Length: 285
Image (tube, rainbow, N blue to C red; front, top):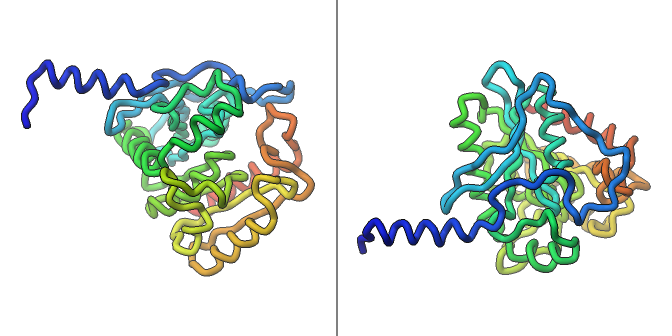
């Protein structure tokens, strides 16, 4: 069936109307409060940082990008959001990586479903997380890689991915989806328990088949990821040949790297960040 101009415009309008987030909010997400004074603020001296628009199959999604101000051919790190979206903490992670010479980009992966910047944690967990299809997330990240490659500034042959909380789970799944990734780092991402119509597999289900080396950074006091699930993940990883590893930090909780939250643990976060940078560097990212 052929469509005339009016029908094409109508079709595009309806499609684009489905994107509930068209621009990134400033500051921290409301659900991430209370905020703590120790939150790290990385400046933009020597880097270029700000919002960009990433074309996807049905429109475009906002993303935060940071990279060195001069040069090109930068290795790429995909930064995958917490459930709070691409708020100030995730944006700052991008700036920290740009200071290290990376092209860092964080796509807003809830763009179709909601603007989570003003939603409560309970609402995000009930109304957003369950309805976001993993398949959609994978293709949006694919589009983000394509956007980086088309920029002329990024070397996507040296591709890494890091994610936090919801994004940590996504790192494991994307590493399975795209074996071209050189290395991944997953901070306290759920390993099991989210399977459903929109989420056909958990990380424990794909662990044995991974080809990408992923470093999992987990918390010993994390009720969301109990010890027995971590043990199961290690066992499944041992059946494969990805050379992935899991490090558990004792006596810290979920979100220990999130410097704006009460769960932040400076010593664990500092060491985890060193492990992250070393993991990427040693694997060609």
